[in-house]
Length: 90
Image 1 (cartoon, helix red, strand yellow):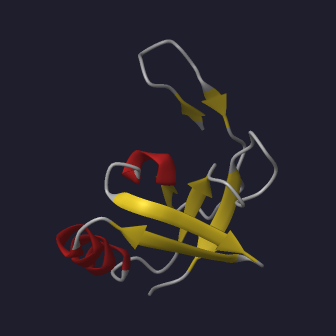
Image 2 (image 1 turned 180 degrees about the horizontal axis):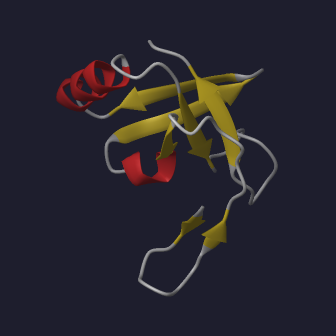
C-alpha cells in the first residue's frame, strides 16, 4: 500500500499481509475526528472529538468481520514508523 497526500508524491510505503477481505484503515485519515490515539500492550483506542464521529465509526466498524488499522501515532510502534493492528468488532 502506498499512501500520499498528493497524486504521484508517495509519502509512505507500507507492506501489510492481510486477508483479501479485510478492510485497511489509515488512522491518520481520522486525525481531524479524533482527540487522541492510544496504543499500549497491543491495545489500540481512539478518543473522538464528537459523539457523532464516534457513533458513525462504531456502527460502520461493527459491520466488518475484522480490519487492519495502520497507526503512526506516539506509542503506536517504533518512532516514525507505521504499525498495523488487526482489529475485531467493537
